[in-house]
Length: 155
Image (tube, rainbow, N blue to C red; front, side, top):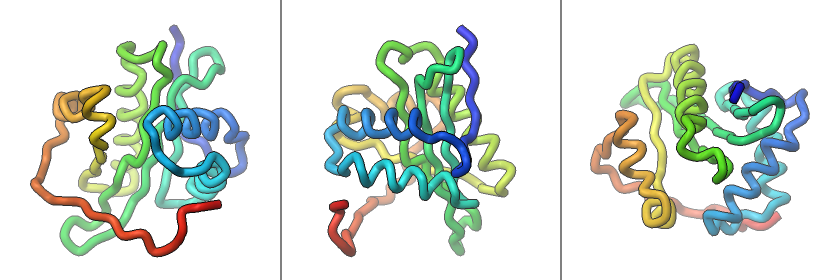
């Protein structure tokens, strides 16, 4: 196993990352259409305060992670890891940890003081991701995250 993680930019072929993200969204039951995932992945890869990482084994894409930074009065630079996905046959082999390590190194270069992840009820029920992230040092700060849609989520 020779897994490497690298950050992708908008000038590169993003098809493997897009395919992994589309697979992730479908498996987890999210409603975002594949065309929207592809479009937003291309946009994210070109934004200076975002990052797209891919894990590869001998050139085969096996995992993906996305980050988005924001600046706020309370913390300064902070981020959200919006997506973390590893192909099922590669889970339990440290691939997500490699992606997280790369994400954290990127965030340190950007001056971020921390970052958050959101664990959906589906992810908790099927993968116990809350426990996984707690083992990595994440903790609840007791905030309730609510979201309001401002426009249609369609293509």
